[in-house]
Image (cartoon, rainbow, N blue to C red):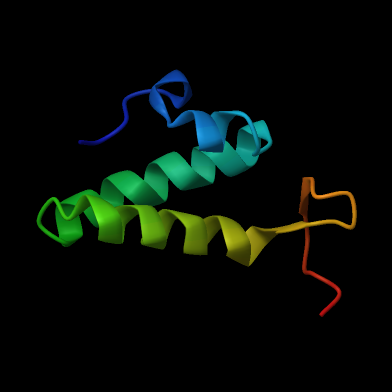
Length: 70
């Protein structure tokens, strides 16, 4: 089901992503939820893909804005 607020996001998202990345995840998920006829698994994949276009994990395992080194 779509997420109304960032506090509704899964813990794995809330506990790991910066606030702006959570916004990206929520918007991408909600859009994919509608576009792909409520396919939850696909919506999560789309949302993570959207986050990964703007953020990457640094050497410490934290999500930071910008392109990855690789």
